Length: 306
Ligand code: PGA
Image (tube, rainbow, N blue to C red):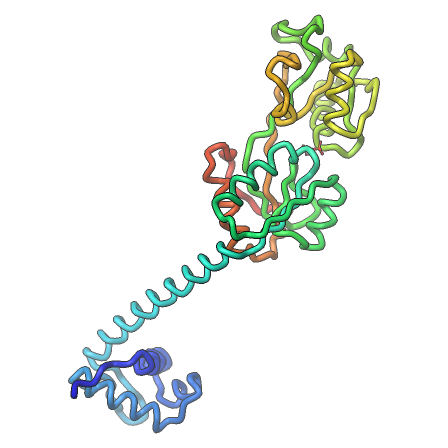
């Protein structure tokens, strides 16, 4: 009866070819030496040609043996790829994805997560939306898979991938006298009563930097701790402000006037961030790939940031 080559025999043969020794191959595979020798004898019989030659203490592969070693490596590579793809599919069927977003990112993060969850309904998703301080503390503790931020942290070693543009635009009530004016100067806009986000807000930092670069100071009339509160104050005629354009997604077009101010929009990005030492899960990697494949990812490449 014709014998068949077994996977086990190929495994032993590959180990001998790689390690150059029957003894070391038997140790690596936890087999006895007689078992290894017997299996190699059977393998050579099945193939119908000698595969391994022993010269003194050294072993050599015959030309047929060399070819079989190559074929064996290819078989194992194919099997490895197959096993990995099964694991990935299973991970994507039932994995978990835990995200954390800074407050302003809540205007887009739930939508993206919702779209992804529809593609992979078996994945258990969680999203926490909180302030910058807590996001930074969680990154440092390596608690979640990915974090959405307007600016990668500077004192934590992270991988930061720009996933979307985040333009900061100047907003006023639609009946504001500057609405519709072209190229309003920074000096002029600085004279308006400004409504500002709380200290530490990324939006506020970006606005302050923009004015500071021109050595202009603005004095906030009101300081409010959320984008929505600022929008309400604008509509109430208390002043103007600059916010991420994403904060307008839930508003009717025309509910606010976007002023044409020199130096605006301030071009920023949203980043997906994770600690540099973290191995992303299959699900987190798939989510990041999904974000980058959506077409509105920022052109700048991902980078490791300290
Ligand atoms: P916020 O937004 O801190 O102003 O809420 C995040 C950012 O734009 O950096």
